[in-house]
Length: 357
Ligand SMILES: Cc1ncc(C[n+]2csc(CCOP(=O)(O)OP(=O)(O)O)c2C)c(N)n1
Image: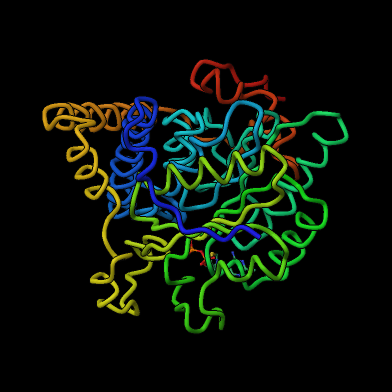
């Protein structure tokens, strides 16, 4: 049974890998700048509800999304702003959801991250704690029954999620059925305030794969190139009949659980560990050293991204909030939303909402 530790050395010389790294970095940067903006809007009292950031996890997140292709299934979680953008979600959807715009994919009804376009394989998250594994399994079964092959489903998870019953049931089913599932576990050292020592007793989470009879890949989640190589390989293994793939990444949550959480319980020494570094400046260094980008390009990208984020927020702040007197509230908000919004290829910005009753 394959158990490997990933590095990017073999991929370094290739031109397509260079392009992939450049794209990946830009999505990481976009997510970081957008999430920093969200944090400041939260502090200014402009956001009702929680804000959950993926700071420190952008490299892994983006690598998962970029390893997928059209027709695949993607189930991101709360730390996956970078992956969502890389999978094709328009930036404006993020701000419209958090700021409660009626023009957003959830029409202003969701406070933060439960958005998606299921018809396009981009699943709306139910819970952070393992629930999405069996949803991805279901989507993969549907493709199987429709006679489609070569489709991969990727589900994100935190290490805390691996302690749940949903994790066990979902992963066991995927293993028994040899579904093309890629389960990406971001071991960011804390589940809210619970450290890994109180979460699992095995030495390495990847060891759990043996018990399920599936393949495992270990990766440094702060190393963009290693993540791209690792996720590319895991997705291809799943696509070509290798069964479920577990990817376990070591990194550190560089924020609180949410922006309401000052995370004073976190051990500051973790920042000094190899997995404690910030993947964004690390990726910049990597790209510069490999000659994949120039300092001038980096500077231009940064100001372009900053400007895009500011412009998007300014636009969303002018948009209407839901009107309780005109909304056709119903138990399943998705009854209208998903079909109407147009999804990933036609950003919701240009698609009219359905007529309200
Ligand atoms: C049943 C249930 N209990 C608690 C929560 C609150 N909650 C959401 S995420 C989370 C921690 C998850 O930790 P982990 O899986 O390690 O992911 P991370 O937050 O570190 O990305 C908790 C306690 C919840 N959503 N559902």
